[in-house]
Length: 115
Image (cartoon, rainbow, N blue to C red; front, side):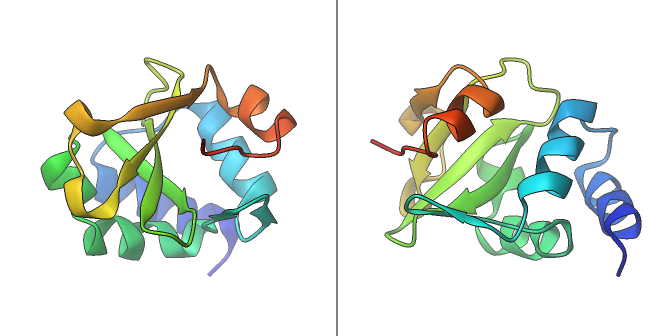
């Protein structure tokens, strides 16, 4: 599936258009490993979010990757707030989010730190 088609599937699953900077981020970095984080390509995002029940437990948020150690990387689909968070897969609740960066670019520039 092409990047554009995969992104359309993500937005269909999400139920609303996602922030354009988020789309650009996924298309530029999806499928890469940066630091301890694996960022999901667009064609894996729906499956990963369904597996982790992101929509049910973190409404409005999207899981973009994971640290391979049981934590998801999540952002709000509208990037409001623009903050990048990590949260344990076993406790996918906004109350348990830990902020790791003020925005996607700052997070990538910092090597996708999760601590």
